Image (tube, rainbow, N blue to C red; front, side):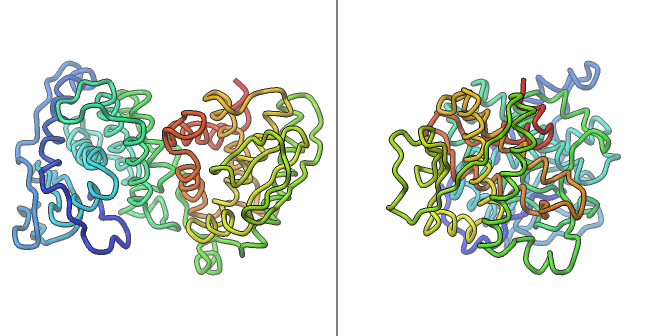
Length: 415
């Protein structure tokens, strides 16, 4: 049960020079001292008896049972010794430097979540469920931090929470990992969902995680060709196929949403700096893509924005862009807003409902999602909507709304 270092981390940057992990662990213990009796039938919480162990290449962690100590850039809980250890040379400085101290706290809370599992005797589950339960427990601690009860983290902002989510994106399993892999921790979509479960619903929900009630979306590649391409269609093919599929989806979904037929939506690609005229565009992705309410069309930059999303993230980042634009059109056509918080989250949920359709359709019935596509959508949402931008929603909020659409379909957006 280890928290692996981000993929392709590069040279270790210099961190703050302070120990963030130990105060975070003490704060997690403070949280569990209050929360644990509610899960254990009133039994008090017992902190880890084996202590905390930061380590480096020259100062290795203690042995864990029969496992000989070795330097690995990760963090882990050792059940045999009931201790928590972490790489203070590479992993923690990288996480703190790249994403802020709150991510370090979440990593430590995740590892402490495994200690809580051991105490509550919740360890007889597949690894991917246990890892996401630990993510959920970390989210419950995060909610306590956000409520202002932390002694180690004060004044946490939505932007810091978004940075933490971005760090989870890098700490996900490689696309194509099977949920049955004994080392599987989960894709980013599932891990962020688990963290949000803890933040929004608390440790009691986390303690109820079981193989039969945790919606795991991580799947392996289905063919050698899919694995070779990473599941990405060629750029031009992706634009064409996704545009046609979104049009067809809304032809089916809009009548359910409104009782009215869907009129085909015009798409106007443009080159950077030369958008089609629109007096009051409903902008997305920093203004390089928009829905034009007056003329009823969507437009996006095909010279810079879309190729950059495709190149940096993957084909479903373009799908997320199109999903956002079509959802804006659907909202506007039914007389609902998109600019305030409620409207933006409705747009994200509606975009997720299209993803749900792609995820659940039968083979041979059009394009379908590949492993990694849900994570690509999450990465695109992080790029589109960090806290403090646009409607005032955070990426954390927007990913939650998108997830509702993905997991519940259109019905999840109609409440």
